[in-house]
Image (cartoon, rainbow, N blue to C red; front, side, top):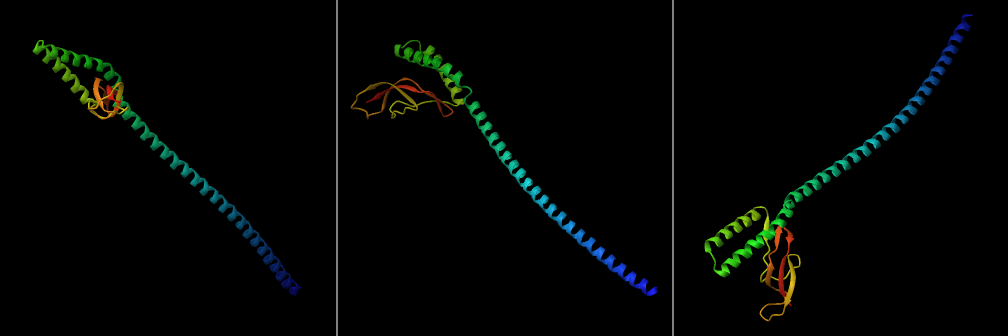
Length: 187
């Protein structure tokens, strides 16, 4: 009987070894499947991460562009904020200039004329501090960006398209024409 028991034990060991091998190969197959699934999950997560990072970078760039655009618009608003006020004051400047010219032409009270000239100069200095410049027109070539031709005249003395008279001065505010000069131009 002992001979049988030894053989049975050997057979049992063989069966156990076969079972262990089957279990190990099954575990190895399961591990492989799990590793494949994990690598697929990792790839998906990496793709999502790259997509989110790309979206973040685009949003950051869009926000920076927005900030720059708002700053530029804000700067332009500040530069041109006084435009309406200045346009309302320009007729007053025109009237002061007419008064000075009239009093000088008639030879009236010189001290009164000097007082008006001083007030006019103060007003023009305030304009200059705030970015207002007079458009030089007399003797210049006509430019529709700065001049408004109200009359034309033929002349042998001047070249064609030259401003020969200014009826109303024009002004620029921080590089923008706010009132063109009304002029007479040579045909």
